[in-house]
Amino acid sequence: MNRIFSGIQPTGNLHLGNYLGAIRNWVKLQRDYECIFCIVDLHAITVPQEPAALRAATREVTAAYIASGIDAEACTIFNQSTVPGHSELSWIFSCITPLGWLNRMTQFKEKAGKQRDNAGLGLYAYPVLMAADILLYKGTHVPVGEDQKQHLELARDIAGAFNRRYGVEYFPLPEPQIFGTATRVMSLRDGTKKMSKSDASEFSRLNLTDGADAIADKIRKAKTDPHPLPEAAEGLAGRPEAENLLGIYAALTDKTLEATVAEFAGAQFSTFKGALSDVAVAVLGPIGAEMKRLMDDPGYVDGVLRRGAEKAGTMAARHLREVQDLVGFLRP
Ligand code: TRP
Image (tube, rainbow, N blue to C red; front, side, top):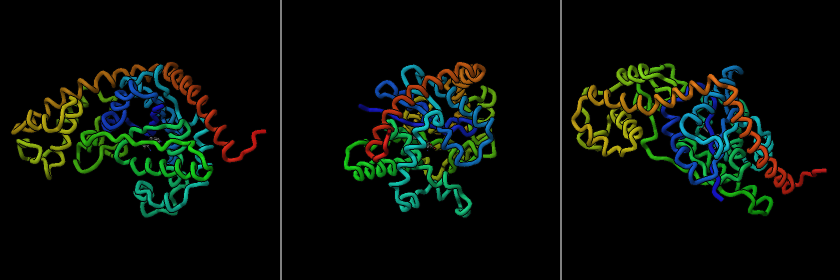
């Protein structure tokens, strides 16, 4: 049985990077796998969140999943906090995870910065919760961005540690599914930085709910360099902005980077940006419009999440009982 688990944190604006790097790939995978797509609100509170904003963002991510083409009937869509098993399994995993494994996590080092002693325990334990997310459903495949690869390796290590500790083959070792380089979307203001919801500049990203005018405006103002576009992909070396914009075009049109470079060989940025705007509006426009429609109907969105929580909760409870038995917790 192949089962996918993946999730996005409900923390602020969803942007093109979330779409090309995650959601769009999930839409394709749902045909071939049993899929569980989570809105990971427990992960979101590893850094401070405004309660009302967290609730709104949870609905927004759900709307993005549905608007992008994830089938809410065939897949399970739910928010993490509705299934208490995530926290419970996370605790059990905490007890078999050596600190040394967590100390290697580069994302914690980056997020905690120099203020390590002020970082919360939750931020540190974040990858253990992520392992629990996947393994609570015995997930076998996990589509994630390159930046989550290390966390996935830890999830495999934790699954192995559990199996060894209890002398069982209970948890599968989940496989990462990392998608191509074209899905690494960089900031429109700086081709060396990832497109991010926390960037202070709105002009650094295309939000999924941006209208056609905003999309065109942001692409027009996107950073470039003074040269025409290269004749071949090798000519992109040292030109991060050109590479990023061509990569976005390639991803949006489902072409290779090489084919896209050939299409615009020698063109001025202004010409290319017009074409990029058109495809960005064509792809993002309908998704953004559908998201807005769904966000105006929170009753529908909450209904999807409620049904998802029920489906997820049933499977989670069954697995958790098996784990409790293996660990030796008495269920009187
Ligand atoms: N850590 C992931 C991210 O920030 C989100 C996440 C939480 C996740 N739990 C997960 C992704 C389980 C895949 C599987 O992108």
